[in-house]
Amino acid sequence: MNLSKILKNTFLVILLSMVVSACATKKTAIIDSQIQGDVYTGTDTVEYLAKGVPDRVFFATNESILTTMSRDTLRKQAAWLRDNPSVNVVLEGHADERGTREYNLALGERRANAAKDYLMTYGVSADRISVISYGKERPVDSGSNPLSWSKNRRAVTVKAN
Amino acid sequence: MKKIKLILNTILILFVSISKSYSLVEVDITRGNLNPLPIAVSPLFQDNNSNTFFEKELEIKDIGSEISKVIENNLKQSGLFNPLSKDAFLQKPDIAHLKPRFEDWALIKSQALITGKVTAVNEKLKVEFRLWDVLAGREMLALAFTTVPSNWRRVGHIITDKVYQRLTGEKGYFDTRIIYVSEEGPKIKRIKKLAIMDQDGFNTKYLTLGNELVLTPRFNPTNQMVTYLSYFRNLPRVYLLDIETGIQEVVGDFPGMTFAPRFSPDGKKIIMSFAKDGNSDIYTMDIENRIVEKITNHPSIDTSPSYSPDGKFITFNSDRSGYQQIYVMKSDGSDVKRISFGKGLYGTPVWSPRGDLIAFTKLHKGKFYIGVMRVDGKGERLLTENYYQEAPSWAPNGRVLIFYRETKSNDKGEGFSAKLWSIDLTGYNERMVVTETDASDPSWSSLLSN
Image 1 (cartoon, rainbow over the protein chains, first blue to last red):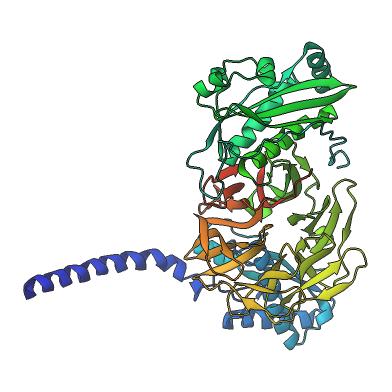
Image 2 (image 1 turned 90 degrees about the horizontal axis):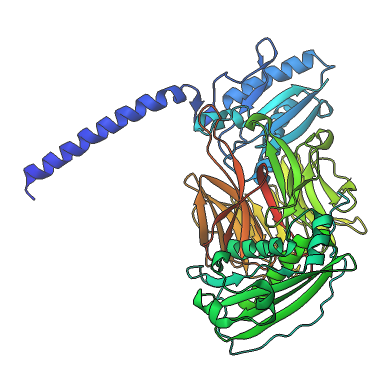
């Protein structure tokens, strides 16, 4: 193989990869605006405990780590709960459908507790918060795609009274 | 629920004659079903009086023929046998049962033949059957049963078990049932009920009404108790249900979610996970004296426990390495060893009733697999790959696995279904197990009669 042929092949490959990446960028652009680092950042399914107090936080696949945005949401919830001392809440932990049922039950419990712990560090008493895991049993979005799954990996704070 | 009759009232074994050795007919079940054995199942013969009696009693015409259909279907589903079309049969059922003309059966390429006779005896159903080796021209097995007429399908299953055992050398799995979760409604508001059916999909009964979420029912291997997870009063707890009496109760007094229950092989304990403060550990509770023991103590998720058949070991699922993997430990919780080291995540380990293998679910690169590995983690074999499937449960003879499979939804959430499937340990004979509704979380019972 002579040099010019190699160069020509390389050029073709580069051209091809440019086309491919262009397509990929266009397709993922919409999702990217709502998912950051595998965590849902949109507002599609979010409800509000009060004005400016979102009811849920989202997680990356298989994770229960709270993101910066989640911590911000939970601080707002904690402030609202401190202002409304008669309200008790249930923290519902959920997983997406891409995991075994039993592990997901445990994962949902772990997520709900991550949120509960954070509320407690911001002054909400443990006896006001109960926890329940639904695993993958109660999705909010029934699609089978990364965006749907990201909306389902969540911990939702629900008024209990 | 009371109506579920579990014990064949009377099984009278009138005579057994098993001819040993030099038989030509045998089935090798350690390999795939590439050459299923051609077998002829002659309709069971019945006299006119018996026919009239059973037609009145059961509202079924020709019960003998119906029982033979049960047998035929079982044999076919096993993948090891090829039941031949009855249209080709040259000999009448009554004569065939007395003395088959082996040339006639060999002519249609049948290697084995089942014949039988049904009679009404004191308002009971008496069934005789014989298994013949067509090529050797001799009887291999002859048995008779007497039972209440309503048990007629079970008679068909028991006959299949006897035939399977005689021809393969291993116990059958036909006189068994499957407990599972029946599913209906949209994905975001799924209604789930406990359901039970015969292994062949008949006699479906619903054990709960669907008012609360129920998951993961499992049979006690020694009796007719079931353990499962119920969200009754929105408190997810492990329950114990007696399917004969319908009586159910919460297992233990845990201040949080208990889940992933299974019985110990002697049926005396329940092993399960208890989740608290974001950590799931494995516990056992003795059903008799209610003593609770903590088996694992680790700040990770420990779940899906399953005992070895001798009760000395437990396999379970843990993410203590960072991701879901399969572990084995002694039944007191000591000597924990990770056994899954392949690529991907591993879940739902279940110990084979034969003791030599652990079946599991594996997730790798967006695909789900059902597989088996030896108990030391070596010799991993993936039996089936799909978009989503999990939770294998072993047939009591350890030759077949049942699991559930879900289909992908489109972006509107349409196209979703959940169905039960079974597959041979060889990886052959994958088939859907037909259920009245969508279904998940199957658990296979032990043989009901032995």
